[in-house]
Amino acid sequence: MVWISRICCRKYGNFVDNLRLYVRGGSGGMGVPRLGGHGGDGGDVWLVSRKGVTLRQIKNRHPDKRFTGGVGADSSVQALKGEKGKDCEVFVPPGISVTTDEGKVIAVLNALGDRVCVAKGGRGGSLHSGFLPSKGQIRQIRLDLKLIADMGLVGFPNAGKSTLLTALSHAQTRIASYPFTTVRPEIGMVMYDDHKQVSVADLPGLIEGAHMNKGLGHKFLKHVERIRQLLIVVDVCGFQLADSTPLRSAFQTLHLLIRELRLYNKELLRKHVVLIINKMDLPDADEKLHEFLHQLENHHDFSHLLPDDATPEHFLKFQHIVPVSASTGVGIPLLKRLLRTSLEEQDAMATENQREDKLQELRRLQSTMSQWALTGPTVDTPHT
Ligand SMILES: Nc1nc2c(ncn2[C@@H]2O[C@H](COP(=O)(O)OP(=O)(O)OP(=O)(O)O)[C@@H](O)[C@H]2O)c(=O)[nH]1
Ligand SMILES: [Mg+2]
Image (cartoon, rainbow, N blue to C red):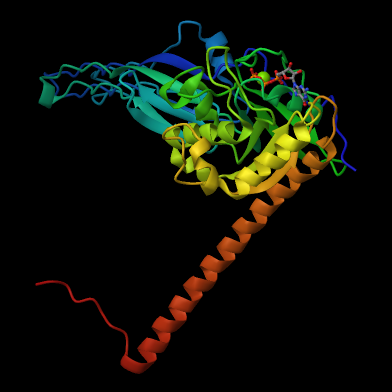
């Protein structure tokens, strides 16, 4: 039996997922022409990925968001070579991508302990520079945090993603009958009776054109990149953003969602996906589910139902398809079990792939060795 714990449900209040920093390397120290002494180089500014740090902490502790390396020491009679200025280390959470103001990605810090120099200190004065020091590098950089969770709820607004997370984990998410209720990601922990847990992220609803920054656009989509599996949530009755926009059936909604994911980053479609068909308590839900499943099975026959250019080149293969009602709780225990199963299946598949890779490697080695037994090893001769 699966059980859930209110205590273990985490909610990230005041979530900060991006931050702009001003970083400046320290200036170099003065050289001494008379003695031929070199000034010390200025200190660099480094970002270092560390556990337990949040962008909010950085923001609170350094309201001016300025980080500067130490100044290199001047050359002197006592120390002809001046000492290097102190490096400045800024601790950041893992999962950070660092970009310049022009949008150029400088680095991605994924693993704990990853580090990158974001502003180099200036050179100390030397013969080369007429013993005058140079200034350190100055940069405005942007840190973007990509959320890490086992699974992420993805869907159009109002599909019931937040209601589902509450039903799965008792996370206290905002739920309302209007689109775009969720404006920042929330994470809930689904607990199992053997104390294993699965983290599930509730993400703001997508709309058509999200890949071009419509709605919450990229602000939301970037979080999907680091999530292990997608939980695509579709309202069995479809979706209509406003009276003036067309009503999309569940089948159409699904395709439009896939299109948005693909246009943002087609690698996302390589992830494992569980399809959740929600609101099964609504009138006619059974017939609509039947029709939707039929369309899914024979999707090529129904491409005429899709809006222009919505036909995806890649059709997602679903690990599991689960009809539920997040409001009444029907199907929720099954869904909880399937979340766990789906992650275990992915782990098993990864292990199997690794085993297969090793076997292939071994076979290659064996065939090379038997070749050698016949002909002797071939040695690459350098080109003359
Ligand atoms: N009948 C029915 N209504 C549901 C169900 N799940 C959610 N709802 C209702 O649908 C509306 C939207 O629910 P939310 O959970 O806020 O939807 P969401 O997908 O998080 O929406 P956004 O945050 O705007 O993207 C609310 O009025 C819910 O009460 C369900 O299983 N059945
Ligand atoms: Mg929501």
